[in-house]
Length: 138
Image (cartoon, rainbow, N blue to C red; front, side, top):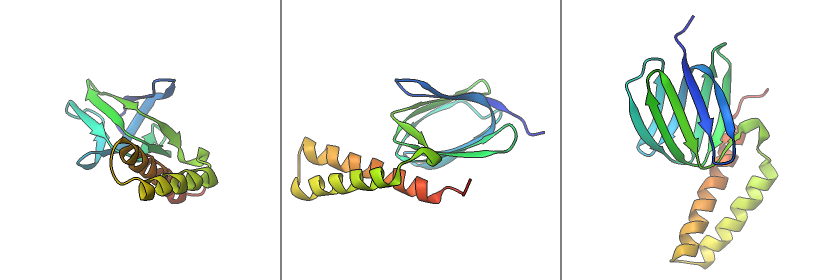
């Protein structure tokens, strides 16, 4: 049996995941990184992307994460997500509509806080669409 470690995934509103896992792959600011049991301690900022978690039984779960922070220490990992959604729960039509709205704002506003917010919303919606489309059939 593979070595395990404890993974907790939290948002401001709730605990999303709390179990022993074999591995995870997360979207860091500098690129994707993996974590296995007994990993060296570190803290990383996350960007929007696909989070892949392999549980103790070897079952893979896919999530769309919108950003956040991750800490690994003492054979445990804690991921504090801005927002996270399991791929199978993503409403593709809603995500596509959100991306279109954000794209319209990006095209109409060229600078300032509205443009930055619209670009961030566009990135989050695009990520949700890509994660939803990339998941394996269940």
